[in-house]
Length: 300
Length: 51
Ligand SMILES: [Zn+2]
Ligand SMILES: [Zn+2]
Image: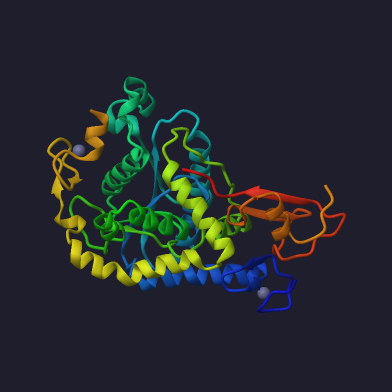
């Protein structure tokens, strides 16, 4: 099969655009879309100091690579931060990959452990009280610690590796759970705030599978990351549903995310409250929508 | 296993979701629309994980 744009052999077929692409044209399309996403949402400015949430999974590694590449054209600072949740056997391999990627690219890297923030490990909390762990546990912890870490390294923005699949899943999940107010807050505008570091998602229009292909081409190790706590049941269900739909009706994920982007202003008008209008947790002093924050509730 | 068709058809037959894997033929990435030959060695690599 030939590339749709040149005479070379194609290495990938993209059903949503009916295109066959060679390695060179795939990378060109990928990089172009990455830059376009950043421009579209004004994610980066000259002189920004960006903390990159680097889990060591393929998405965050690709994010690091692509941002590093962009630094050649746009002067901004970058520092990678990794959260070590302290789940046995979960982080060891990806932490290695994260370290290695930063060494290769010459990027400063900081690791924040759950234990130094909470005073105990996740596995210890799990042992203390099995019922206490809500299904959003790791999500809450990561969000909290990444925000705190980004502030500690003096960043004014936090870049995370959420891809098109993640965003489409989150949109659908919020609809299926009837949580329009949460959906309204999901893709917050970039507003600086003392407590809450605004997040940017430069890969939000990149399908997860393409991140994997790009990672393979750039020699990034693909490590299986599956959290041992079985609390992703609903997201897994939605992921499966979406992937089945995408197979039968290519472009579904883009369509879901695009509709969300079309209506998010209206949602925000209706449900109000941006992160900068949130209150503060009386226990830890971090941003919190009402009273004691989720993180403090979980670790108490 | 001998299979006559494309990786898309192969994945369908094996009930593997196309969106969650990358297919290599003889060690190289190929479009999943490529017709497979009898002597081809096909690798299906899972790239999407839960959590
Ligand atoms: Zn080409
Ligand atoms: Zn708190």
